[in-house]
Amino acid sequence: MTFQKAIAAVLMTAALAGCQSQTEGQQRATTGALLGGAGGALVGQAIGGNTKSTVIGAASGALLGAVVGSATTPQPRGQQLCRYQDRYGRIYTAPCDDRYYNGNY
Image (cartoon, rainbow, N blue to C red):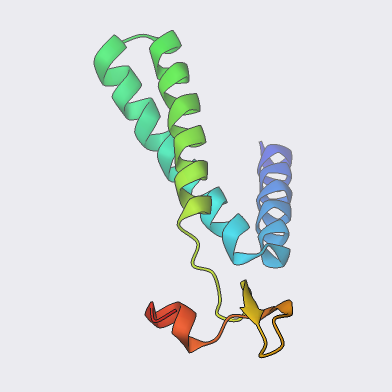
């Protein structure tokens, strides 16, 4: 019994250490997958009342949660590129300025 607790503690520590090097988008996707999987399992069990529906609900909830968590990650300013035209007619790309973010473009 003590050996199983030690293995569980090592696995939990490794899982938490892996979260340290994730980007914000990856962390949001992981959190969304965990919450969506738990919620999907509860809904699947409530609707179907058997193991198969619980597993299907957990899988679909995890997928949906990961997609939503990843898609709702805010983009930091300065990451997007806009196209500009100089006074000689040449087109170039550069980080977007405040006109882009305020909608005055």
